[in-house]
Amino acid sequence: MSFLFTKYKNKILQGLYKNKDIKPAVYKNLKILEEINFNCSIYDASYVVIDTELTGLDSKGDCILSIGAVRMKGGSIYMGDYFYRIVAPSVCLRPASIIIHGITPKEASECPSIDLIMPEFIDFCKGKIIVGYCIAIDIEFINKEMKRLYGFNIQNPVIDLLKMYLIIKKKKVGCDAFVDDNLAMPTANLFEIAREFDVPVQEGHNALSDAFITAQIFQRCLPALSKRGINTIKDLIMVSKP
Image (tube, rainbow, N blue to C red; front, side):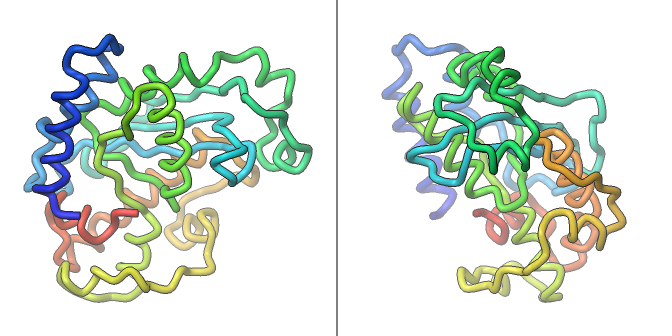
């Protein structure tokens, strides 16, 4: 989808929701494309690196259990500027998923609902490009809640660290070489790629710690992307959108 068409759709949404009673942070999300300079260098842009833990992978029957995010400016990670919330799930936690994320039903039941957390998350992401590893699934669940609560998808541009990794591994140069929907998926998971980039990892899944690992890998990818002709945010979105 072209940038012009994306902006056109966004303008229509702004008009539709202008007089609706929605939280300021949520309405501000509709204007995010006006805030981002797509010709900005990848080293000057603002990012928010996210990860979620889910009750399962079926977006119809499962839900978000936790959200973690850290902010970045270019290659700098803002260590103290993070977001982490455990969400009271709308479905029962299965034993198999508890083993993965370590969040107990009692712990989750004492936390706020996604209805309260989503405006906070949107506000944390304001003015930022969203980055994540295999992020399509995270965005699918986030948009499920966005559409239920507000009627539209999150408007931040989104880029996938997995696709960046493929670019670097394929060692191609120039944006056009990467516009390929049939790129083979690597067998490496996030932790394996982290070790490849000398990023320390701890076994076990936590949305915030995984977001921080993803941010460190992204940090290390930037120079390699630049060497391959990926210099602006527009370039980066073209080659790594989910």
